[in-house]
Image 1: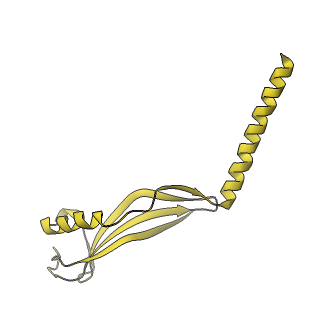
Image 2: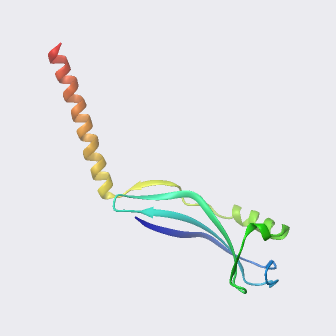
Image 3: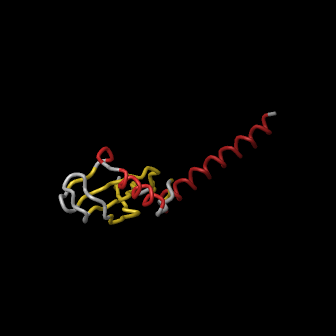
Amino acid sequence: MIAKEFVIHRADINNHCPNCFSARGMVFSFIQNQKENSWMIRTEKEIQEQLFCQHCSQEIYPGSWDDAIERVYAYQKKCFTPMRSGIKLKKKGKIVLGIALALVLGGLSLWLSLGNVWQ
């Protein structure tokens, strides 16, 4: 199974870094995961948020955010729409599902037709 990460929204912000106090180089990233195999593609509903300072090369965790960063975070979270979560079947998965459904319907119709003969 192949796991992919998609950055669905990236925003450079001008707030001060709590670690190095630099006013430039802070980046918010909103990431959504997707898992893929030969049968299907599954997009996760969960969105990961990351605040990274490019000046000091450290991730800033929510415990050290100040009120200004919280306000920018709330605004940036409203600025994007995530990918739809769910399962999308590939061609191979659709074929197998179709064959399985045909076998179940065929077995059900055979059972119903034989049930009428035995009565």
